[in-house]
Image (tube, rainbow, N blue to C red; front, top):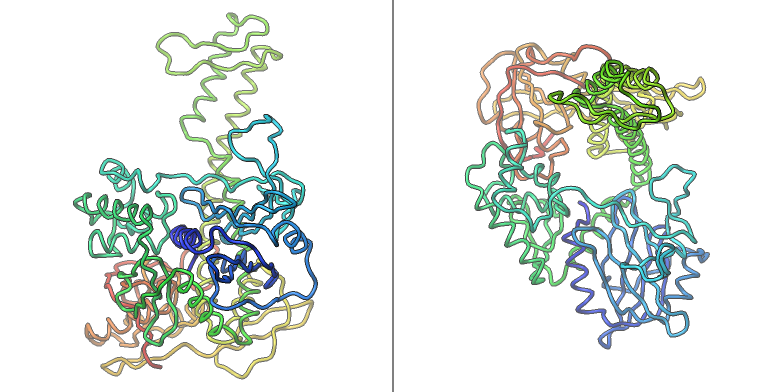
Length: 601
């Protein structure tokens, strides 16, 4: 559950009502990524948490006074005590559609400073900045800030796109691409649907095309527009309901008419929070709360309590390794894509070289541009004035050959990277579903075996009937994981559910017979599920039961409805070429839509 733009906007409204103007009485550092301010406003003490934790970035008021979490004051904390303690909180700004908040302070001795909270996942940060003059103009159109310090320092030599170090000018996050939600009219919605594949979930189309729209907000929007949060792009008829629902959404933002909500599952565990009722989570218990801060604090507080066991640290370590691996692959993919040119551009390079040779006698010394004859569909050709016509033609032919090689080799490399990223998504699902330390360690070992983490000796574990092995400098490390989850269907058939990618491979290609039924959440990483029917008739109730398990033991666990593919195991095969455990190709499937259900082993 991410702290999205809408939650940030609701918190900003709440702070403007309750904490502005206010005076900072104390600043504490709660942990290595979080700060807390004690504010006196409206004749009350209030406690504001600002967290740049990469997993749970957020800003909200606290019900109780926070405890100091660090013994030694960091340089940032010392500066905050100098510039912010004793200062007045005079303004709070949020850039349009961004998960960024800027808190402006006025100190009686040191003047004006600001804390900028960037709540953007792994790039989250808290920066103490001071307004300065622009190097280009003494009267800039927009404020320019210089960083005094930040909670996560990012050095230029580390290769980051946006360094953050004391003394540097502050660079805001890159502007989002896509349409702003308030610009969504019938014509824009029609263009989005026309460009989307018919089977693509519409919430994903909205999330990718519109600024500031999270998956949670997109699903709730579609529930209100069409009564179906999982509707696909090809199922949409009238566009009016979508446009009207978005208009109501924007009105909520403009009026501040928030309705904070906390959703819990049947066992009382927190599922999600939002500044609006989460009606699309029809299977959840919804609690209305007085403020968005109360919803956020309860959500993360209860999450921390449920995860406060010996597995939390190990889970975070493996998750960090997964994220590093994903970032590395994404950078490689972006580098390859930058080298790829459209087919028309590649042919333009070849044609440019040929026309330079054909018109060589017409090129004057130090000429910088050549216009092809009338009727030739080719833009003016740029020339290097230091080269001869033959040299310019050779340069174009060289670029043509390089671009053609990149096109020929680039797509296979992109396909290979897509396979690797898909596998990492599956390992992420394995980690999210891991029930004990052994299953967490199994993900770490799988990462090491795939070459994305250093192999080391795994800790000892109780006996089990499924094992994974890793090596560390010649020593064998062994992680023993319980066997597949087993459930009994209403007809007495055994239903097998893989615990991770290796068990998916095992139950699909070793345990399942050709006539058994095979199920998997459509479009989501997760467990393979097998109904051991041996070709005997399987009732719709059993299929629905197994499909509910496939949905629950996947990344779609918290969705209201999930599409699950069902087919005979004979229609499932290993993909050709290099592959990772658990990968499969499916033919002849049908789709059932179910609610995720955990069942009883």
